[in-house]
Length: 117
Length: 116
Image 1: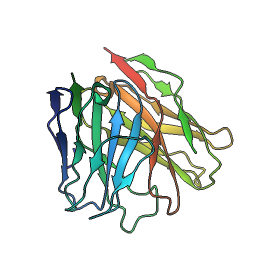
Image 2: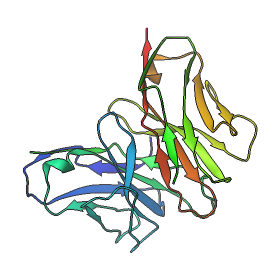
Image 3: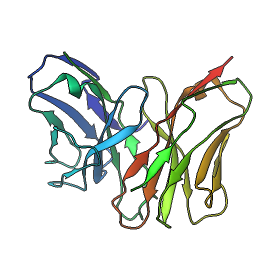
């Protein structure tokens, strides 16, 4: 399995709390991604980063924010959690240096299942 | 914008038999890549197979092969000699080629159950 880690794996939290989902990879990959996935449904890209100090919004609008201060770390933050944020959040990374689009492989973390009460 | 459609929400197959998962996509791009990803229960999603749109030859990876029909915009996955470990959600995905930002667009997934 790929060297990409997410913590916590499961989180149950009350409405209004601030939460940070951690994602780290030890492969030196330049590009990192956050996807949101409801149970049994497709993945939707919510954030991505080309490298340090780069963050972009994905296809699906999200109230979360991300930061990329270090290559290996790409945390996602929700300032005030709501029940509508209940979902699974998947982090991924890829090494795009020297590859044309489509030639690199995205490696996924195990995901964080978030339940907001 | 691209769309990816998987018309089979759930499928089942007997161990050692062959199963085919369907995927269709819609795009106006000529340079693109198609992928099948596997997401086992409570485990990480992994890449199963990749197909470059400019290649006519269908990709194969051991027991996994694709039937890529570019004109029909169809990209099915065939799993031969199914094993219990193949039980998972399977996602078809699309990526534009060139310097388009390496974004994956996923289909809704097919839940495959391999029965002993």
